[in-house]
Length: 317
Image 1 (tube, rainbow, N blue to C red):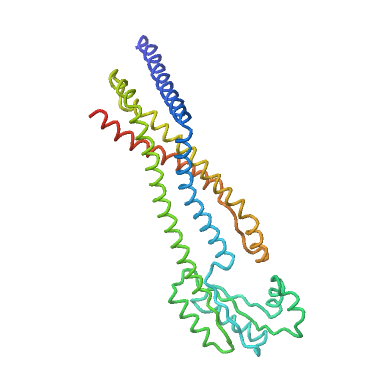
Image 2 (image 1 turned 180 degrees about the horizontal axis):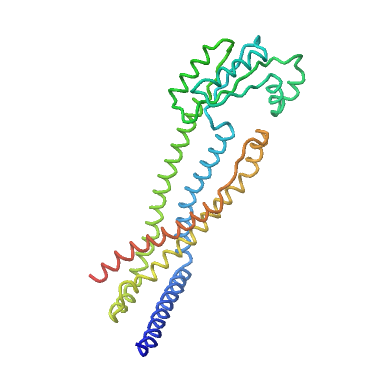
């Protein structure tokens, strides 16, 4: 047993060194093949990069729409405007009554002074508020439905609030929030579908390029197969070539999205300022960009795998 162990260790070391040498050679050879035809490689990378940048751009838009919705209020809040004749004691009594309902989660009382201060803080309303002889705003109750309440339960609550004594107007914010949520869900579905379609297009672009490369090197492949090269060894350079395409295209897609963010910095700054800082918009985080880059490499590898396997099967036949 002591004489076999030293012999097995160099054998494993030799196999590992040979495996690493083969992969290093395929990695460098595939890169040399790309550099030998810069125009063709550049066009493939450009088409694939632009295709992959579109889902990232739509996802950027979708994320900022969600931030916009959050700035306007995530909950299905109901604004209850009381009649001008209702004083502070009456408003507090109604708030206590509503807090006792099982379908109400929370009730916040806003005084006329608080409402006027919020209006004065809005851009363009400061001078108008100062010119008012008195405060025309009524007491307002912000009613939050119970967490997890269905839309039918919220509608029943709104009906009950409209019938309550001392209530002048009930504004249901849940309706526009429901529409906005439906729009965001539609955008999320459309973005996913677009990502799948453009990802498939990227796979086809790389696959067609690899297919042409395999056909152009048919003589070299025939010699390799003649001397006993395995199918995995023959296919390996093309897999690395597809990964190189994906790596370069993913970098291009990330740079295009960053360029888009840089172009939109000034308009976004003006939009945030118009909402007095309550609106928070931003770009994609580095984890999302890195994930998109990794997906690009995987798509390039997949396109090369499909095309090279099909073409090499035809060569052996």
